[in-house]
Image (cartoon, rainbow, N blue to C red):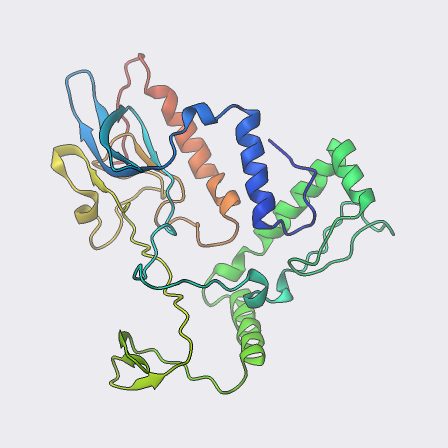
Amino acid sequence: FEPNAEWDGYYANGAQIQKYLLDFCDKYNLRQYMRLETTVIGATWLDDKGQSAGELDLQSRDGTRFEDRCHVLISGSGPLNRWKCAKSFTLFSRSGQWITPPAGMQDIRVIPDSEYSSHPAPAGKHFYTHEEKEVMRNDPERFLKYRKGVDSAMQASFPIFLRDSLFHDHAIAMMTCMIKQRIGPDVECVSAEIVKFTELGIMASDGKEREFDIIVCATGFDVAFAPHYQVTGRNGISMKKDWAEFPNVYLSVASPNFPNFYFIGGPTGNWAQGSVLATVSMKSVENLLLREFPKICPDGYTVTQAD
């Protein structure tokens, strides 16, 4: 509902996406509802008589601990917020263009079949023409049609994320070929776990010590299903223990025994499959959360949970 006609190209970069979100926040005066630089230590459900609510254990940046209460708690922290790397290491990040092949070249035009249309190009190399930007700024109907076309194309490519599908296998083969061409043939793929770093390089669990001049840590994130903070539900049930073997979750949004606690981008959802922004606005979140929230009002409803 908040279109942006100022994107430089089809593939918006991080700085532009951040600016869009900050401008959105300021336009709707949302900062008054935010508290930044605060860590959630724990969340506990309290079944007080007539005052059922969640109690939050919080810690500010200076280490001060304090408590707060809420009737509804939505966890939107996402899985990629805790590095799996010792603090003493320096992390390096490859650019998206280095690892991404030109498979994402788009051919959806703001001005179809026109000499004023930009030509398809990979990420970082596609830019809208002046004429296209004018259409996006001044012709809402055509801009909406273009936006729907982009969304439809993205949804049509979803089979890429389905294991053993033709699209998936083709994408894997293409990326593998591209990476081999870029890094060359003199590469050894080692699946053994790292035991320790040595003076010469790395000691792996296969007993071999391999020498390196430079080591780049790209060990990823702790992607545990349960939130990284302690969540305690009804009857003292711990979410980490309840989910020890597999997340007990409904539509990746809610879980039994944890009333009024919801997820955005929760486990078993499609947060790892395509655009994060499209995932956040998926219908199961919109319909379920927006439908349930009005019930938590003085109309006889106080608590909701997945069964």
